[in-house]
Length: 317
Image (cartoon, rainbow, N blue to C red; front, side, top):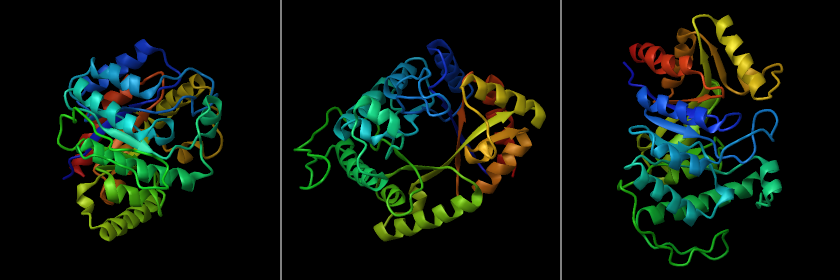
């Protein structure tokens, strides 16, 4: 028997605010464990210049119309904001939501939104991951109430950084997204409470093994980290019906569907049984939590059936 935990990520692109907020309320009312959105300034599917909402202010607004789901960015772009400010944002959200904040963070990858907004993108992904590791270390210290001063030569220059109030929970959870073997997964092992990976079982099996090696190196028990997987389901009684909904969503998001698109972008389009079977292959690797990313226009039927039908199938094995 499995006790699968589930979250929903609502794409922040291609929607008006009332629809975005309504979907968040439905997710909360249906009993999902957590509710997420992206942290992007330009749309990441299709036309980058279509409408998109900012992440942290979205979570703050959702905190006042939801009551139970934990709230987070999957994941925050470390490059966008000073990490000391991020710790303050997460703490404020935690108080706004009565202790439901999750601090999601990653290295960031979309160059266009950085150059357009004048945000430093660094010299490459490796450098951004070094920045991420340094940032998360500082954030963890600040959230735990320790004064933080940066080591010389790093990206940041914290000087006796202190935070008050502290989060409502003794340890506000940090989620790290990504699967880079040398740097990202080592940061996960050092600091994260949650890790999000995406991919087929054969891909993620290697990542899990490497994460466990990093945990051993830093003296961390891997069971202290919640393994979460991402997917983009569309659920109907038949695969053909699900495909029709999926194609309409992509057209709405100005996104062309080419060869291999569904597999590369981790769309799971089909029946509850098809989706459950894919999840079961991941639970065998130690994944205990699934996060479904849903495109606008938000699909109430998939929201209902992912938790109402897929979860029982997975839990029954």
